[in-house]
Image 1: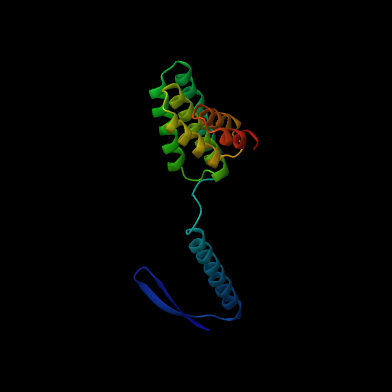
Image 2: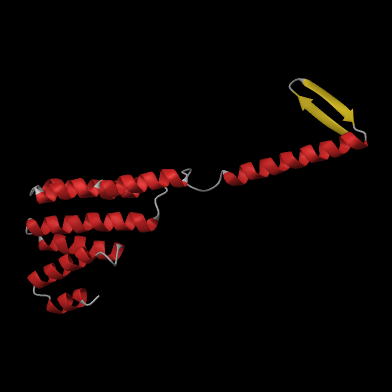
Length: 165
């Protein structure tokens, strides 16, 4: 068996006997496997391991309590701005599971809704609560806010549908 080898500037043709021939086949076979794995591994995924993803999810969740403290301090516009930043960060972070992303975004929208109630902008509050309940159907606080806005607007049939979920 003859093979052509090129290494740097040196080129040569090598004749292999039986023992070296099987080594060459194994080396070429392993090289092909490594090349194939390398090519297929480059095409997908986030590039983040489970630990890094968990840290990103925790960081995202940890942003919400300080924002709620702005709401409690009656800084409603500041809270809206901070909740909006949380929404943007949730969209920008790669590797976050969609369920976690939606829960965080739902809570941020819920907070925005409550801020708009305090600012007496019921239309904006209704929109925020609607988005929150679409993102996370189990967010009870957003359903309460949505029902409260519907009650304030005299939409009694909606109040009943929002409270019977």
